[in-house]
Image (spheres, rainbow, N blue to C red):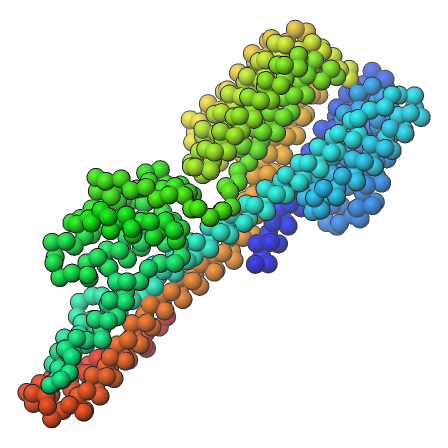
Length: 567
C-alpha cells in the first residue's frame, strides 16, 4: 500500500519542519532576552532579528529542498556552540537549537540520531572551556530529548497507521459480506423471484423414482450452515444467524427477527466475536421480534456488551494479540509527568525532590488511566482524558509554584506553573475539534484560572523581560496544532486508497452474491430441462405445457438478470 506509506512520510516531514521553526524561534527569543543585560538593546534587537531571519530562511529551504544532513548538523553544532559560549551561565535555550534536527533524524532513523546530541555536546563543551565557562550537560540532554521524542512519535505514527489499516481491512471484509448478502437477495428474495418460480416448478418434474426435493434445498441448507471466518457488522452477523435459525424448522413459532438499534448494527465484530455471538444465540434460543443494543461500543477486537431483548450477552476480547489503540492524549500527559521531575533541578525551580517525584508518579498514573480509557472507549473518551490532564496540570502548577526555591535562572524569573501549560494547552488543542462548545469554554476558563492563581502565588514580582518565557507554551501550542494537522494530513493520504479498496470490495461482494445464485439457478434449470426431456413420457401430460412455459420464463429472467448493468 504505497499511498498510505507515502502519506505517513509526508506527515512526518510536515511535523519535523513545523517543529523546526517553532522551537528555533522560541529559543532565539529566550537567548536574546537572557543576553539583554550583556548586550545593548539595539545590538540585542538586531541579533534577534538576524537569527530569526536565518531560521526562517532555513525553514523555507527545508520546505522546498532537502538539505544534506552533514551540512545541517555542522550548522546546528556551530550555532549551539557559539550561543552557548556567549551565554555561559544558562545554556538550555542554545542547546535546544539542535533538538529539531535530532527529532527529525529520529523519525527516519530511530536511535541512530543520537549522533546529534553526542556531536553537539562534545563541540559545545569544548567551546565552553575555551570561553572559560564550566562544562554543561544541557547540549547533550536537550537534543537527546529530541531524539527520544522523534523515536516515540515515529512509533506512534507507524502504530496508528497499522491500526487504521487493520480496522479498514475488517470494515472491508464486513462490507463485502454485507454486499454479498445483498447480491444474493437481489436475485433470491422478493415477490415471485426466479428462485421462487424454479422452486414451484421442480415438484411437477417428480416422476416415478425421482426425488421430490429440489437442488435449491441443498443450497438453502448450505447457506444455513455457512459461518463467517472474517469480520462482520453486528447487523449482518445477526441476519446470518436469523436466516439459519428460521430455515432449520418449519415451526413458525420459533422464528426470530432481530432489530439492531440505531448505530448498533454498524458495530464491527472480529471473527472470534462473531462465532461467540452465534454460540450465545444457540444457548439463548431466542424467538419473536427482539431489539439488539450495543452497550458502549468499543473498538474492534475489544470486549463488547450486547443486550438482546432483555438478556445480556458479553463477547470477550480477542485472545490473539492485536494492535493497541494509539492516541496523543496519554502521551502528552506522560511526557508532562516526566517533565515535572525537572522542577527539582536546582537551575530550574528548586522544588524538593520528594514533591517533584510525587508529581511525576501522579502524572504517570493519570497517563496510564487515560491510556486504558482510550483503549476501552476510543475517541469517545477524549473529554474525560482532557479533564484528567487539566486536573493534573493544575496540581503540578500549584505544587511547583508553592514549593519553588529558585527564583531566578538565566536572568529570568522562574514561573514553574508554565510547565503545566506545555502539556495542558497542547492537549486541549489536539482534542479541540472533538469537544462541544461548553467543554471548549470550560477548558479555556480552567487554563486561564491556573495562570491567574499561580501568577498571584509567585513569591517575587515579574519584570517585562520575564514574559519571554511565554514563548515556550506558545511554541508547544503551535506545535500541537501541527500534530493535529499532521494527523489529518496522514488521514487524507490514506483515505483515498482505502475508500477505493472499500468500494471495490463492496462491488465484488455484491456481484459475487448475484453470480452465486444465478449459477445455481442456471444449473438447476438445465437439470430440470434435462429431466423434462428424458422423463417426458412418464410425466402427467397436463403439466407439460406449463412446465415448458415456466422453464422458458426462468431462462428469460436469468438472461435479463445477466444483462443488467453492474451497480
